[in-house]
Length: 108
Image (tube, rainbow, N blue to C red; front, side):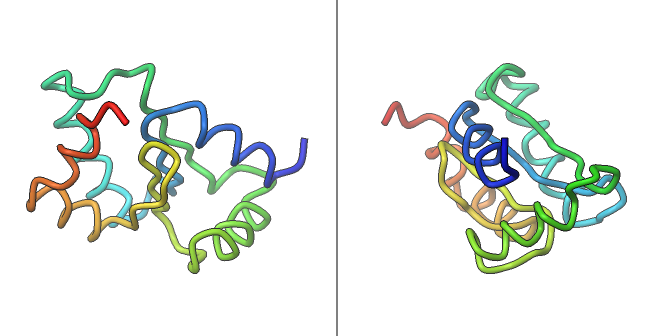
């Protein structure tokens, strides 16, 4: 399966997908926000996946596809219900404004 196909499949299969690097401070911020939603059960472990790409042999290909798909190669790249919602600062901002909670609760 191509990197592009694998990413599309993963994003479609989960409510929240975070493409991350474990040492990235912006990734840590985004993951902390989602941890709060896991803890209060607005998000289930089955619906949430973090994909740490720094040791993936396809890391460069993943970041190249993210540039095409989202306009940037940087991590985190965060998808909620199949839609790109931004990186670490955007996730924190959407959480602070209540938008992220609404996105997670919407039945769509």
